Amino acid sequence: MIRGLHYWAAQLLVVTSLLHLMRVAFTGGYKGGRRFNWLLGLSLMVTVLFFDFTGYALRWDEDIAWALKVGTNLLRTIPYAGEGLYALVVGGDEIGRPTVVRIFGWHVYGLVLVAAIFTGWHLFRVRRDGGISRADKKGPTISRNELVRREALAALMTSIGLLLLTVFFPPSLAPPADFDGLPAEATAPWFFLWIQELLRLGPPLWMGVIIPLVLLVGLFLVPYALDRSAEGEGLWFNRPGRLAQIVVFLIVAIIVALTLVGVLR
Image (tube, rainbow, N blue to C red; front, top):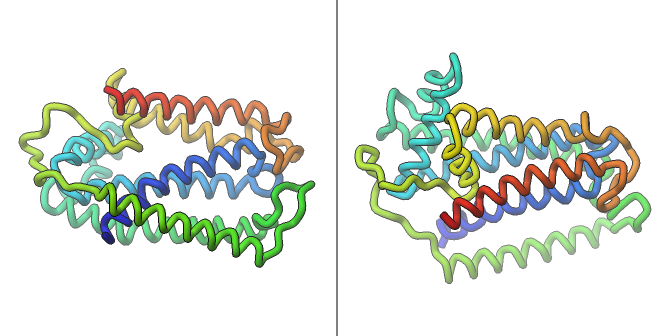
């Protein structure tokens, strides 16, 4: 039960993070003094993806073999620093028993430390920048008691949903991974299927490292290069932020489309 709750909560956290990103982008929630918090939120979303990947790898069954092999080998394609990063992540010259310990350390300590810093900073900035109790600048202010009531209700409903998913769709485990006899078909976790599809199109360095970084940098630049206006904060699809909305939509659409291709392949 605990493993199932952990699994489904991790999957839904990726979806929730993406939906939150789109909501902030389409309502101009990054405008004004909230620009830096947009960067913190994006950094948290990237951390969530690494959390999910390391948790996925810790299953150490045959379903994760290709993903771990390809994911770590992508580090080796990075000029100059690749081999050092590979050894840092896997704990040696190749994937083996030390890799499990190393990934476990990253999952429960290294990434937790990073996430704790970004989460605390993010929440501090939300509060400092005016909180979340106002739907938009022209709308009514929500009282603290009403805000807590809504959050508690949402948490209760989410917990019930996670319990139902765990009971009716418990996550399974395949036989232990054999890195000397990988399955014929490469597989990636669903949240990285889009990178797997990119890797089918060209060189690993470009498709697996540079293009994802370019898309991420494009998101980071939204409040600094695409929409520096303070007008329209809190308004859905505000006109001053139209270019930023289009760019965010296109980036998300590309990722979703490639993910669907990977699912249907």
